[in-house]
Amino acid sequence: MAYLDLPSHRLHYRIDGDQSGNAPWLLFCSSLGTDLSMWDAQIADLSPHFRVLRYDRRGHGRSSAPPPPYALSDLGQDVLALMDGLGIERTHFCGLSIGGLTGQWLGIHAGKRFDKIVLCATAARIGTPESWAARVDSVRADGLAGLAAATAERWFSPQFAASHPEAVDRILGAFAATSTDGYIGGCTALAGADLREEIAAIANPMLAISGDSDPVCPPADLEYIAARVRRGRHLSLPGRHIVNIESAETFNAALLEFLRV
Image (cartoon, rainbow, N blue to C red; front, side, top):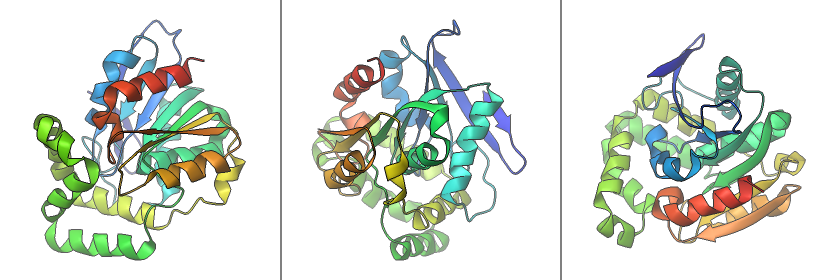
């Protein structure tokens, strides 16, 4: 296992794929309440073409949790610190949900460090400060266990959950293992994040991928991003919020087509 030690916390990361040093980098950024294993379904198809970097967000997976609250800028700076620590000057980026918001922040504030950006099942603003404050109160009172059933329903369609129970159980296991501080910190970052105006500054080529039945970030949210940035386009795939798992094969094909052009 590999770690980057920062002043207030440590980040766990993993590198897969072409180790020749010649392949381009591709960095994956996960959803709230998941760990880097949420991208397992992408590795076999993408690692022959890229050096694939995955990491656990602060307070998730094997990364440690500094005390909340966190801001979106903290999450973006973690990505830049990881890139600096590994000597990565430029990379492609793919993020889902809060990972997609992190990608938008990076495109605004550090766009020259990135080549193409893929944003999945996200929005320029997710929820409201009030809804995230209520989520924080719930987690402080009852922990994450009380959110598991509703999370599974938001993240996966009933058809997928019935036909792939092992995939759903694996993701929910990572959700249950997330530290309370890390989850609450993610909620506070989401509560303060509204990039609806700022994303117009993003000049990187961008692909916005939605799940066609995602109740968290519906296709209209991704259409907005694709229309607002300078060089964006939108693609909708079957599935709910964790669309990279529910439509893994078509998701991977879309990434390869977009990133390798």
